[in-house]
Image 1 (tube, rainbow, N blue to C red):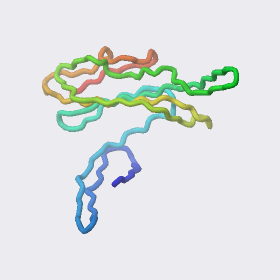
Image 2 (image 1 turned 45 degrees about the vertical axis):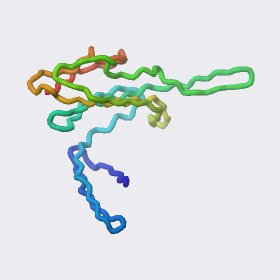
Image 3 (image 1 turned 180 degrees about the vertical axis):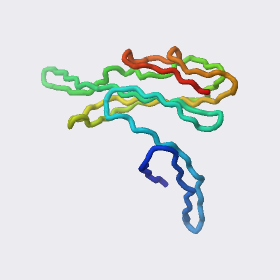
Image 4 (image 1 turned 90 degrees about the horizontal axis):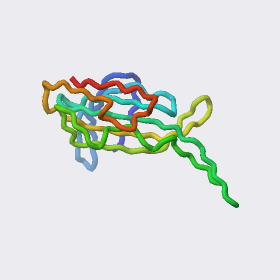
Length: 166
């Protein structure tokens, strides 16, 4: 079952529990609590890094990036090819090998795709990169900082602000 929800305001919201019956069997879902935050701006270029608290000792870092895609035209004798190519295919992310004292990192995931945004009446295509890194706090007394030196592929124009966990 899929339920589409459109939030009307920012902040913490709850859904459920949902109750439904299928073939005379009653099902009840858990209550879901989630936070509605600002939408990304209407742009084809940018990097957004967010820390999201999950539980008392768990959080995730979400990195979203938009890289403008430019139209490339190539011609041969009888063929014209028009493609969209991103300015770079390297998205900002944590380095492959890193360690943060006080944290363990059991898993992460990343993907890229193409999308577009309408700016001043014109569709602008971009490559969209999305990475999520899950962390567990192993030492509640540690002063945990996520710093620029843990990252790679930081765009030259991007101002990285260190993330203080506690």
